[in-house]
Image 1 (cartoon, rainbow, N blue to C red):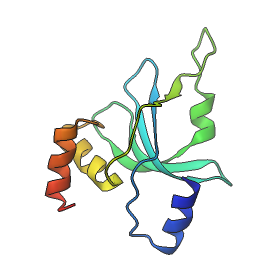
Image 2: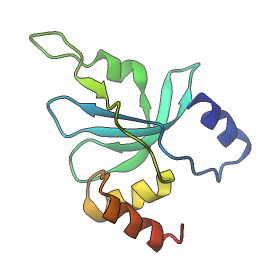
Image 3: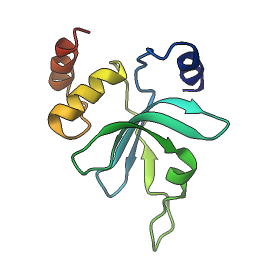
Image 4: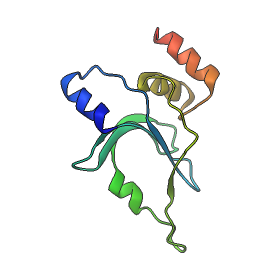
Length: 118
């Protein structure tokens, strides 16, 4: 993710595949992240807070790490170790906009890729 962030500095048109998927344990929030500014601990990617409006945005990793269960004090945001970003971020965004949520459904992602001519 750090390398991707450095690449974008010289080529704003770069369309990296997401590298990591984070999700809330007990909610619907999902973050597909492709870039990381390690100096400020800020990541860029597709952010879906579960309200039907996924968007490309920046998110503070420090803030995500600070979200804890009110009573148990355990982290509420987890990494999905099985996630494999197979498409560029633009495809995930297109599929998310069409479905009002982040999706990993292969048929929906292929449809989005075809629509974008990727």
